[in-house]
Length: 412
Image 1 (cartoon, rainbow, N blue to C red):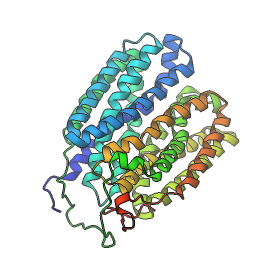
Image 2: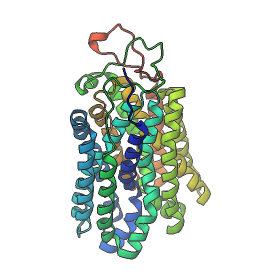
Image 3: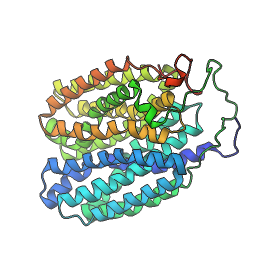
Image 4: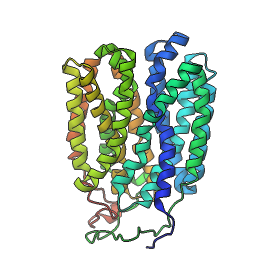
């Protein structure tokens, strides 16, 4: 293995720039009421746009992940940025809810999914010595996107209207994403960071599973359902944060909108914090703690009378743990299945997140919020129990050999 003169932190800068723009999707709740007021659409129909966007986004990570594994991340991320811009510009001309679903949800979601996996897979390959931390940093921008773009979105809606806001964002996002994509350069195949050597107890590197081989392991399915169950609570809160504040807690729209800021801050912070902790504690240990904290938060929201302070603390904790899930599952995928095919492999794991984007908001809009929170808490407890069933997988032809992480700490 050898070093390279390329500063790997430049790759991180490009990755974060891309993710900030993609992560602005988490500010969707800011669009709910303006769209309802302008077009007279039903609340649950407008919220469904967010679910469609996330589901399509997740689906496209499979194709994009496989393509970027073969041709590299730069062109794939560039294409994703342009596709997102096209979807937003078309959404600015939407006059029916079905047009919004098609333009923002499907075309825009496809753009997000195409670009999303590229910075993550690239950064993990540059940082075998800090896999949990760098996964957290690489996706922290996604969590912070709604925070950074909230004032921009509110300003545009207030001064130009909701439809025109889509037009302006359709110009801003692709410009930044295409710029960030130019920083996504892959390291040499035999790259090793300066001053770092794999742990001595690593007797053999993690096998690089193909997607087909990964699908034959029981660990994939446990991981997949753990990811699904853990993300339900976070996506439920994120997609309806303002509505929860106004309809459930009884806050005014301005105070309720502060939840978007809180979630964005703690979502981003959770990605870095949990990623770093997982490098020290192990992935599974960190995940169990996150699931327990998420469950406790959901039970608190479902059983207690919330004021402004309690509401802000609860949504902040939900965002903090949700961000951690988005940081740890890419690292866990690399720990268990190697980095060579990580784009395609994580794309498959990520489908759990896409399904959660439909399940979480749908649960919340089909019943009282208190009941929805209780269900989300129960699902989080189930995920914590499932975590104890995970063990590192072994390829069939390597059965009986010892394999500990590819320069990474033990996953559990």
